[in-house]
Length: 368
Image (cartoon, rainbow, N blue to C red; front, side, top):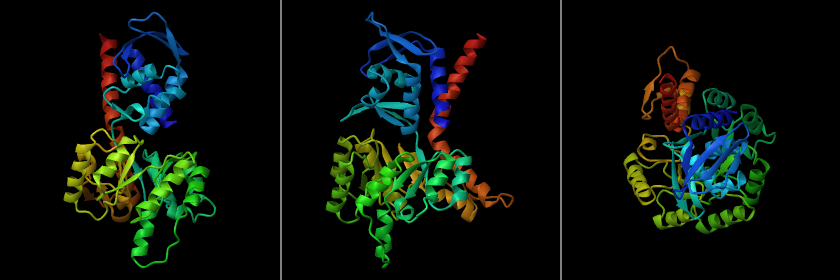
């Protein structure tokens, strides 16, 4: 319902003050009219009037809010006039999106950072606080979920209406083995079966890497893709940028940047500066990212468990990721709720600014 309401609001606001738009290639399209069922449009130099069902337009807007990126090809699921639909979305999301072109053609991406709240795989109260304060997405690890025989994690995620980015847990396994612990390896077939079983609540999932074994990692990724799945590839922080270039050329929905935990902040900043200078329009997810570097670079998304410091240590985060001690009158759950609202705001910042501007324009027109 959250994204449904956002879609309806954007669509209504656009029709209040717009009557034309441009396609991805710059062609002007005029909106002839719209009623309760359809929008009627024609090219500036054409005579034929075409239509898009309003519920399809709303569905496309909602899809862009949910996924935050969409290609012209993917829009064919909503209309045969996918170029016109892309142009409509470009106009509807003007000021809060960017258009790029890659292996899959034109792609429209919403600006802002989606934050996935991690560290709550088995903490129901934390999930509830996150949801109550605006969180829509969480990151959970298959490493832990695979041992939940009764599927309690799923029951709570469904009850709260959350969507999950699934981490394979490969890094956790590697760390524990490095510490000398006996850990059960993850079988890619079991991982794939789990993803397929829970597709309805899995927003995205990280590919199954084998730390230190590129051949095994590639084989796992190939197997997952052979099933028609689209795992999120991971680029290790100290990897070769030529390998990252190959991933970028494949035009994945998002590429995760991993293995930055333990790096000094200055080293991360240098690395990220190199990555974003080389690939300024790419959609990168920062695995385990929760510092001011989120604001310094145009991340697509990030995840971290740092938000839990509110409950554990009474730490309050601000928009620059600086922390202060919560006042004595604020308990741990209230501090936790504060941190959730700060991180949710990363995604909504640009949207809220544009919508506030739209409302001012509409109010000015009414009073004129």
